[in-house]
Amino acid sequence: MSTDIPQDLVPFVDRLIAERRYLSKDEVVAEGLRLLQAREALRQEVQAGFEQLDAGRGIPADEVYARVDERIRQIEEGENGAN
Image (cartoon, rainbow, N blue to C red; front, side, top):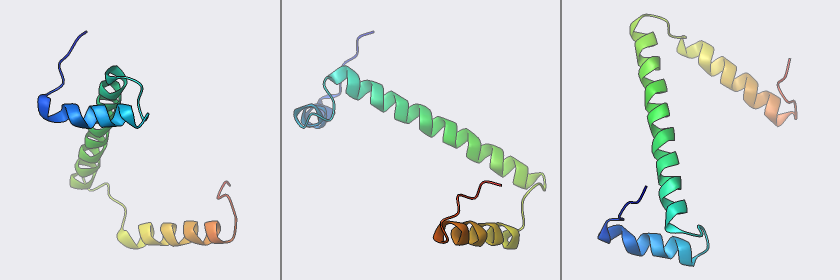
């Protein structure tokens, strides 16, 4: 597949290649597509979460905060949290 990079993005792509962050324009485009794929997956997860909340399957905030506080305590004490 061949594609053209929009003129306003060419300097950005060229800079990424010049800085050796990517070796080619194809690598830059592939990374952009991977990021779009990840964003779409996240969007779907967020939508599923909203649907769960709408269906009354949420977790009370005080329970979430208690879990977070416990996890922070484990990290601070050097525990790995695996039970």
